[in-house]
Image (cartoon, rainbow, N blue to C red; front, side):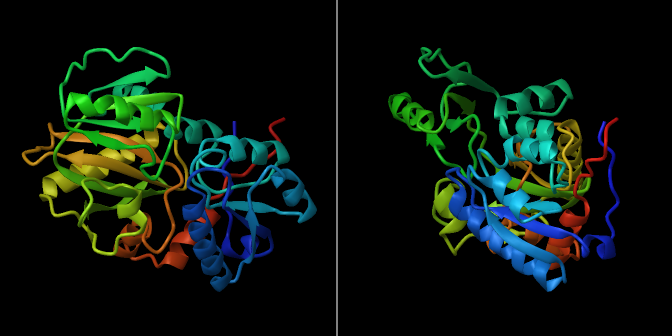
Length: 320
């Protein structure tokens, strides 16, 4: 059972901190931006910090540089899915964010949905397909959203309005994963809520300017999107979204900063019409990212947010 270390600012400033960024996933470009921003923020705060671009030689780099604490600014496979967290556990290096189990559960959308449903959280109707399986008749009709099971930044995601377009969307999703989801398309507001150390920071509506949905281009290359904090929904719905975000965080046993993505239907009430889509255990930390916008609304500068995440790093004490 892991203990939780209470790092102080003074004690952490005596440590050698590495911001782990880059990595080997399709989200590498986003991670490079996240890592550089976090590195600059922590340096501004006075921490002894350096950047490490994560590759197959990560263990050797950590050992050679005598790293005391790792700040994770990784996204996607081999960074957000528990792999790097497991390596750090074995090496006895404290790290920020969620642990191995929580990271793996959040990254695997089907596992997360099973856990959410078991806890009574509302999820979108869907089916799961393994590569090579025949596509069954959909129990919820069209339109649908097709997405890889373990991918981020909307890679491989397609909205399908007609049956004739489904095979191409499935083939696209299978380029990124051996398991994919076909889920009912829910029309409504795309709402996200950042959670820091178990407490929801705010709600945010993503109003996309041009794209049909919030895909990679809309997230990182479009400058016309609007991000409304708090989301323009009733106080009752706002409170419900915050509550669901905190519950999803708790169900997956997340740590540090995470972000819940939800859909709120037009006529939603606190009892019906709000769905949890997924939990991001290592949300983006770029200038265009959503978590920093919600942290700012809650009174935290970007540097403050990075510091809070760092100080909440896991302690790996002797388990004997």
